Amino acid sequence: MKFLYIVTKGVGDPTGASIPVHMAVNGSLEVGHDVTVLFAGDGAEVVVSDNAQTIEGVGVPPMRDLLAKLTERGAAVLV
Image (cartoon, rainbow, N blue to C red; front, side, top):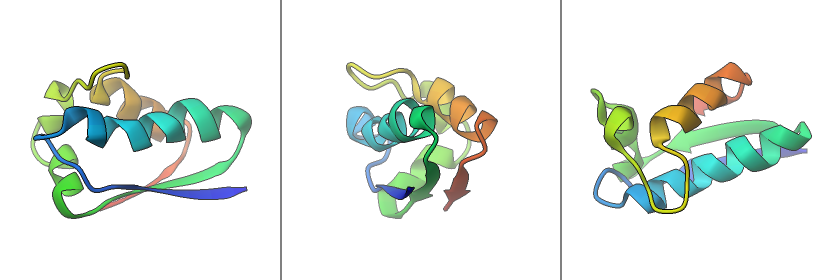
C-alpha cells in the first residue's frame, strides 16, 4: 500500500509535528508500505535549519531519530 503523511505542525507543537512522522516510520515502513511524508505550512519549519535536532514531542521518539529512520528506509520526503 501507498501512504502519504502530511505534517502541518511546526516547532510550536512538537508532539503534533512528530506524530505523523512516527506513524510513517514505526508503523507503515515497518510493515513494508510505500511512504511519502509531506512537510507543509508550519510543518516546513521542521526541516529548516537545525529545528529537527531540537524537536522532542511527548510519547514519541525525538524528531532527529524519526527523520534519520525515514531517510534510512528510503521514504520520499517533500517540502
